[in-house]
Image 1 (cartoon, one colour):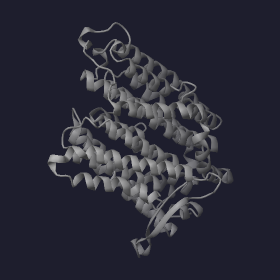
Image 2: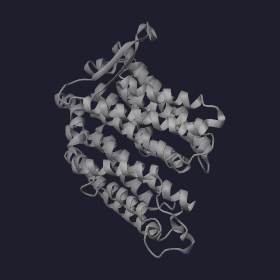
Image 3: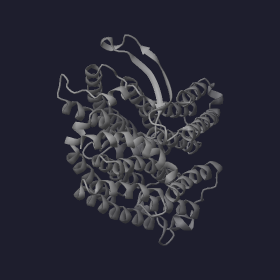
Image 4: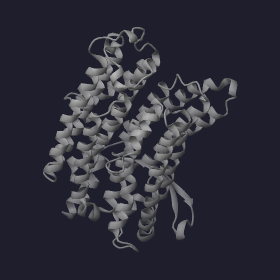
Length: 490
């Protein structure tokens, strides 16, 4: 099943590219069919996954490069555990949403949808890979479709933003590859599970440097201050669907890499630097929220809010306990659905008004009541309203982090207050107030794909908010082995 999930979007991308130019509009239906099939497979993977069975499940494995680097075998090995199964489900859902909100794309249609499907394959490879070299290759593969989608179909300074994204990620990846090679050569294998069970004890270079080399790449992708500046530009100039994927799943690659690789393979170094990680997390939460309050562009506002919310992931990671780590993993899932919905709504508003300037909009609720209502739901979920998924994730993170890092946790709680400020203020300015006559001709959401995209994410947010055990049981089974490492060393 993991291999099928990996290959379906790639097959769809090839079929889309093979279409003749006069039939390229059929690519949107190919993308919808194959992304829906992949989503169905992700649901099956999530349902089949047994949280009571330890270790990885549904594993596919065979020798790939033999003898490999320096005599070491590089394997194709994929599988899922309680940490990756929810993220695979999230990827499947958001790719379908991204395809749906792209139905209005008219320029180079088949190339657009091919890159979108290739992006799903690349991110799936990151979430499923159980070999360091394979993980790195999929990590790098993601750069191609993202760069092409932003530069080719973006707006504003699209090429500048795409290149900035590329440079930041490549710089982090270079350090990550060095770290992976050191771990593999010193540990005698590149297999993640084997390295987790027997972490390297010494290396050609200090393991603390290896830890930060790997963490740098993950912190850039997360992202947190001060390596976050690529994100607002990329979001602002990217097409709506690309922003949905970027905020929904690509940022989660950073958090997933920390939980899958950095913490379990280098636990002593993670424990030594936990205070630094907590300080970065607390500052990022407040910094991101304060900068968000100052934004005039609706899309840029949501982008900076992601910097703040990803600080919660790092805060939970820095706690190094079962509750905090579970909160971090849950925050990744819930942020994906909430911010994905926010970007969908911003895209629908921009498509109708052709502006993202908050000061130019007023009283849009009179013209677009459904869009305004769903935007409010997404905003309330983002600020952590009880009964919605964001509340469960933030509360779990705070409970897990307070004993270990009280000051950083208090900063995180203050970030929630600031989030309430910028969300409610934005909704009030854009959707409420006196209606402006220049928006008299605006229409509300009225196409089937708009209803489907909005409805699927709203249902996910409310379902997890009311019944969090639907996802937390899986997450806890994946976090437990990581938390046990730090409990044993305490």
